[in-house]
Image (cartoon, rainbow, N blue to C red; front, side, top):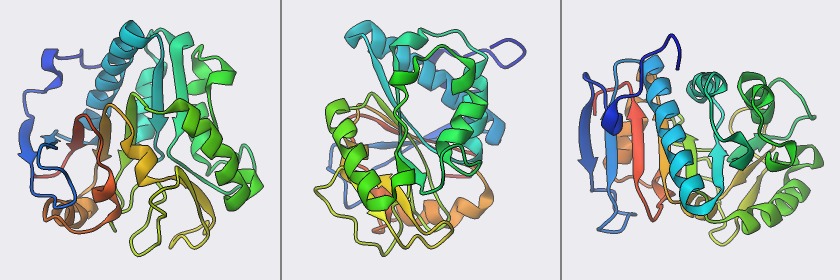
Length: 252
């Protein structure tokens, strides 16, 4: 990436620290979480962009398509801006969204609007390969419609997630009933506005070859501690068959 730190072989930085976490009681014994501590949120975004690019290259070389699930949030947005400045085999990327707010199309607070503004409008991914959540239909109808697209897409190659201060991820919030067998769930009582949303379920988000969780800001420290302690918070329900990597700017 011109004008930015070059990718580092092995995808580590000189000031990184790695730790493997195995004590999450919801995870199989052979499932490992790897924590990568980076200097700051900008370093997290850079590392994430490199990892996404490498995952895309591998998936396209092996299977001809790269299926990626996007997250909302400030750090993912910074990552998307970096991707917008790179060269990639864009026609073979397939984009999905982990969750969406039930707001009108093109609303500034929608995740797909943010991703388009930061990245997708600036690269040559065919529009028919960008699968937005039809959240304008409302949580119930929109979830039903999107479930058909998700069912046809599984397994994903890479899922990007964030972590809320309460341990939520996508729009899966603590204390909510998340149907285990559904791929996409309607959310009608989110604890922050807007209350109506649509989210991929833990089942769908776990059906991926790799998960990348971006965690920045010291206000996330308590949520990270709860996750490491094995508490039953939504992020702990994401159990992919492959690696689960966390990039964070906090002590691990």
